[in-house]
Length: 102
Image 1 (cartoon, rainbow, N blue to C red):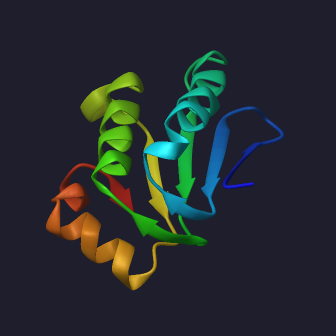
Image 2 (tube, rainbow, N blue to C red; image 1 turned 135 degrees about the vertical axis):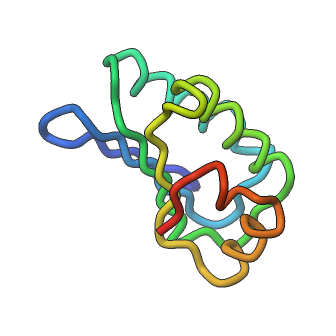
Image 3 (spheres, rainbow, N blue to C red; image 1 turned 120 degrees about the vertical axis):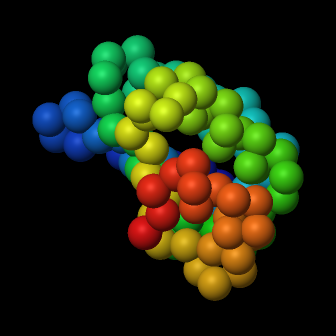
């Protein structure tokens, strides 16, 4: 499966892991994953990119929509475990100014 989710025991954090390609093919699955988290109220969302091999502009757009849906500048979205190529894409796109990246 290209996308997996895990809700913390206390229900405060939703982790979405992207495995393989992060592109438009994941749009519905990605949206459905974070919408379930948002239905639980104020929640921190972690996007785990440890197994992400590829990210395109549609993935960047999906991340922007996620940020907007979770409160814009006040959102709690963390991009985590990026490889060198993904970090480079995020930096070139100035996402390092919009998101917390670890």
